[in-house]
Length: 370
Ligand SMILES: NC(=O)c1ccc[n+]([C@@H]2O[C@H](COP(=O)([O-])OP(=O)(O)OC[C@H]3O[C@@H](n4cnc5c(N)ncnc54)[C@H](O)[C@@H]3O)[C@@H](O)[C@H]2O)c1
Image (cartoon, rainbow, N blue to C red; front, side, top):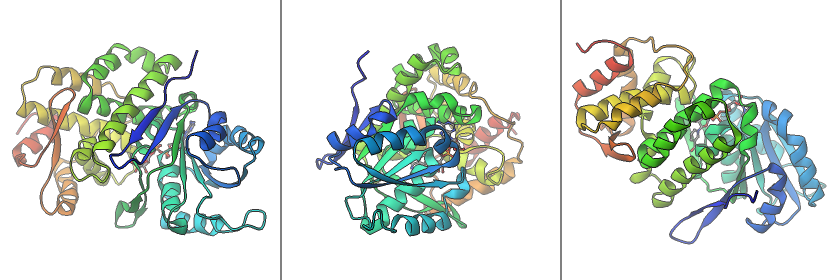
């Protein structure tokens, strides 16, 4: 079977890059042919889980194509998205390869999930004021979301993702076959972002997901490949319209204001980000229903409620409301929420009443309205 046509992200000023779904062994050829990168030294950042599974084949194919790769393997997990890890990456990256220091044409390849992509991406944005970045996402969340659109960064003790830059990759190669080894919780965390993409922008994709939920649960390869492609295409379209999130790109945050509050109120310990997004979307859908009578929002709720969670949300509503204030402060006192008028049609709303927000939290907590 012929490989699917690559997606392409194209900005109005002519910049852009290919997003290819296919085997990682094809990376060297795509680096040369699609991203015009010439073989020489290259840097690879990965994490221990991913390196064990996919690094050696990638190294062999790069070496055969004439590249001289050097690899840095991080500890898996959010703790690696830190200034300390970043500083260690700088020390390692600035060391010479075969006596030659890196130059502005030396690419950095980020092989892993969103954590590796964000921290390695920020290193690429800042090393020598910017070196080419190649995203090789291996988690579902990274393939459909974090590897596309150029957001990079690390966490700070004052909050998540507070230090970062927009640095678009030169190339993205995502192999859906790598998702077979993804742990169950990580799979469902990524599914939250897939369902979100459908809800905000593509009603036909929502129907498609609903009809194939069993095959998705079984990670059937044909279904997974098409699903990744369709979800990634939605992210591409939104980012093309608004690279720096001055407006439309904010619809990608559907459910996220509620999710951030859940993550904060549970100390980032109970739920992954994707699981918090799944809960946040329940609240955002309930809120949308109070504004719009569209019957398919009820269907949307039912699908979102099929996203597997490790525990119920067992936090006092008061704590969730307080945690929500942090996002409000950062937005200069205005809580801007994403709501759906119908499936596939998202909009920003900053006139939501406190009562409607309280009711949405009550719904997610399974409590009757006060
Ligand atoms: N830049 C953006 O636009 C953007 C968007 C959304 C989220 N993010 C960030 O992404 C991060 C979350 O990303 P994530 O969910 O990919 O987490 P992650 O990178 O921690 O990966 C999840 C876990 O899965 C493992 N893993 C990855 N691929 C695997 C595979 N194929 N087989 C087996 N194990 C595998 C990893 O080692 C890790 O333990 C957060 O830091 C979040 O802030 C960034």
